Image 1 (cartoon, rainbow, N blue to C red):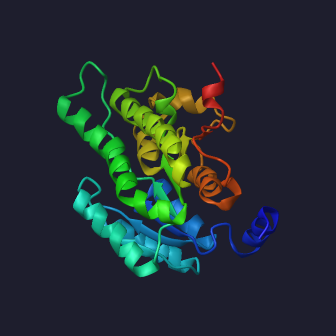
Image 2 (cartoon, rainbow, N blue to C red):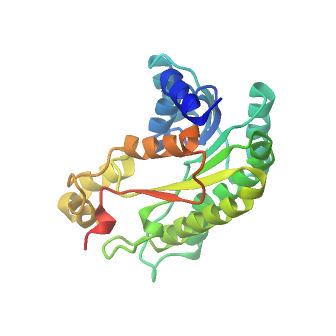
Image 3 (cartoon, rainbow, N blue to C red):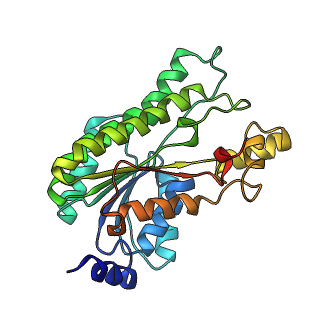
Length: 268
């Protein structure tokens, strides 16, 4: 089938029609939105999270949309054994993996000079190590399917923020972006595409809580003021960028990062 004909078909039946997508961190925020969007685009979504209650709510929402999802929780992404069980179960049930979408993250914020070693290590483990581990476990299956990886980075991995104490988060996400480029380089020989999406300040539960507590004094307020809307971004904007990278529309795209920040990083 010609490339143009295949894309035309996929637009009719769903941009991820019949693709088996492993998606981490589906319990809330961007992960929940991504799960709903991908399922609506025809993907076979195999999602995981550490929280069974919020994962069940995501599954309920996907089903209320008229779609289905394999929602697995709790899955501790800090455990190689747990990740392997999750991946192996997906392969056993569906026969393959087409896409790994690394959304899950759990940072701790503090000024650089005051951040404890414990919180630094926690952030690295829960923003970088879990991406490394999932990529490594899923890699042989993605080689077989000539599949794709989408990693969620952050604007923090690209640009510093004066008002937001995020050194550990920035270090972890900067490493995710570097890892993405290297895996893309290694993936060329085996047909695996690896890309990333870097969100700016999005309208997720932690950001909502920050504004409720501090209003205009919120550390992210100066960043949000520079966006095209003057508001935190809708998480679905990140999901749509990831949808493109996961789909066959991006079959000639690897090693790239899509910045979804409302233009904040382009404005002094």
